[in-house]
Image (cartoon, rainbow, N blue to C red):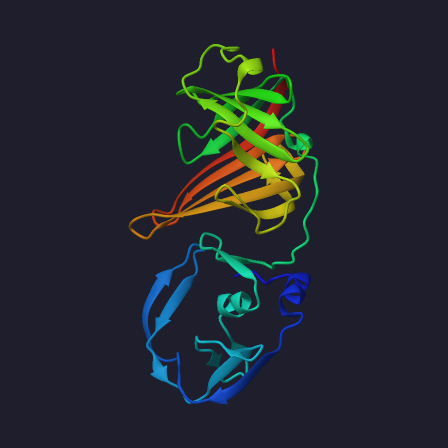
Length: 286
């Protein structure tokens, strides 16, 4: 788990009173009974549970935390991050792939952005470098904006798909999508119903933790390294899906100012399988 930023932690504990006292009960420490490899390649251990007389009882604003805490011989006290954060009205988003946690507070500041600036450049061809799947590499041909609508054609070597976006200062939405489209101009934009199959992708103001159609905004101003180069002013959104067998699928999209979508990821935690597409270059559309 990565260390939370100081400002984030301040936002979590302001106005709350956290108390702890030594009480009787069970904590976990003892003989190692199993080991496994973490996603980072480290070796983690599973210990047999033993009775420990130095359990700590923790309360938040007078309310007891139900889970146990651990008191170690080096006088460090550890509590479960999710339990404490949720009792303080915050939300914890854990990423098992990176073994990191993001904490979102209810009063996280919203950021107003002009989402027309997050559309892909008109009359361009974006080339994406892919890994993990033969169709992860693709091109995105971007047409001109007409009446606030933008056509893009994605060709991954197996099929060609058309997407039409409705772009305004407050919202970037997909209003039409169709696969197996090989001719351009097949949709009359003047007659297209923008609301029948509308799916909002980004909405301003933006706030970490904000949910948009099952996706969660995790970052509003990130900087990432791509084959294209270092890109800043990146909005990151994430969607987690728990499958019937309990395994977790994580999908991520990265939208950059002046470039549109620049990276997407599909991560199957259970199968340790990842498909990534990253912007590599942009050329004029001919």
